[in-house]
Image (tube, rainbow, N blue to C red):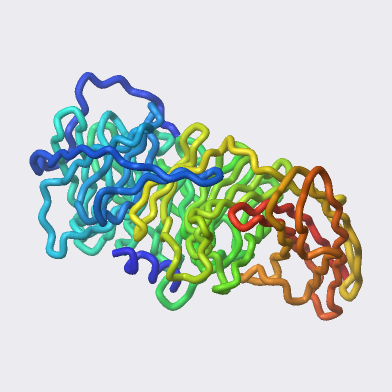
Length: 468
């Protein structure tokens, strides 16, 4: 089921609180969940803490509860797990029998006192009442729908995407299911829906099986007629989107960068991630915004990253120690969720649930002497990179830019006076020379300069305007 979701993608919050004395059951009652309890061991390195699950559960889909605990899907159970901060895990196996037993669970939500999850194999939305372990399900009419991600809308309804059904689904507080067919001329493969307010929504359409070009569409919940927000840019396999105060972020799951749409200027820009040396793309998968901080996971790079949009900085955390150096070593961290000072994630094949401590302060930081540069095509410029802090291990510098989907520089050449800083204790200065080739197309580009100790990347973004 993991492959089923990823192949298509590559080819192509809280709601207002309601008080319930008893969660309302929706749909058909399936029976009682099988409940099991475990005490999990944890491992820790840097900002990362991970809990090893008791079996090969294929965890996927995750949400953070109000008490800081997390609920996540367990695809081979099938069912959901409830992990507390102290490592206690309660598993709820659904009273469902599949052959094979594995389903796909990409969406999980804590809504109206029940835990909701997408069950792709069963073409249904399953809900659990944790107080009674009762499991119910809302069946979809299309057995090939593949219910995918789940979003609690600003209208206090539960929205979900039907990846192969070309449909957005909505379940209201009275358990009424409404399905909205989406236009196939825009691709017809909805990956995720998010809301700017109670009536204005957006969804990412991955595209069709013959093209990785996607669309981001907006719609009014009172009059469902989706329209592309902009026709000048088509994201590559748009697998996720997030609404920020001033714009919209898109994870491109066929690239090594994120796309950003500015609501005010109605323009797009690309933000590269740090390339890896074993494959051409890092594959951002999901993205979520928390004010000025934009979090995302990099599937092939095996990292969780965060962009500080106010300071123009990027931090990337390796999810394994040592970091992956080939694709067979990645943990397949496919889904994540924000919760307080923790960014929780699931690792499908490594069988971990873990978190990044968002309050963690790396031992060193990176700054640039300039925030933006302007050059003619064929010109050159210099800037200073300042490193502050301490590191007992060597720090390596690398470069990326927004020229192409790989984020690997081609027509923009960057060289530093030091590619390796042996030790850092206080402050160090590195000079960087930037050359643009004469054939470089005049445009605005984003440059990324990264300094890494192996486990953590600290990087700074710069705007580069290239003129004729």
